[in-house]
Length: 185
Image (cartoon, rainbow, N blue to C red; front, side):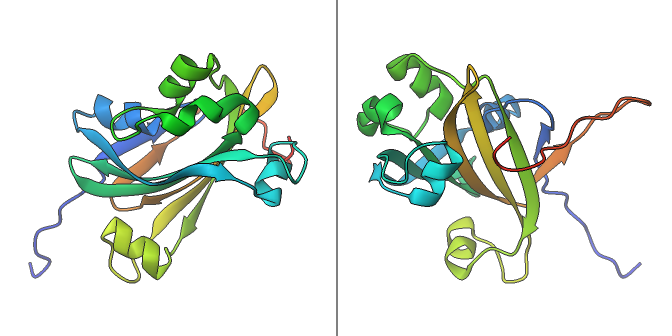
């Protein structure tokens, strides 16, 4: 009594420990995934270049998207890839396609391994506005390094709404995953 109705809007679940595509996760749930491209350009970013094991002045492709599920904001996704590999993506349309699918189709390469770090975050005012979140609502902040054949291919950061997305881990007795010791592993 006096508690009202509680609606669980965590519409999307993602298993941990697997290379996944947010596009595929959303579509697999029955929702329609759509993206608004905020920025797509050649970029110089010494910090990201270091994450990718490249010289500080290496040109990078930068893709920033607002990810929508059934036309409701879900995530802000920022990805950097070496221009030496990803230059053909500069003319891609990312409104309704997965980056990894487009990367494979246009560049002949796809991530096959990597790591991801997830932390809670209070989004900035600009991010809250894009994600249609109220002040004080939490999100997840994801950092991902994807590799292909052991070579760094993609550095990605994603801010995803905490009220609409969950991560699920499966475990069994006596089996412990190894932890990422540093961002360079």
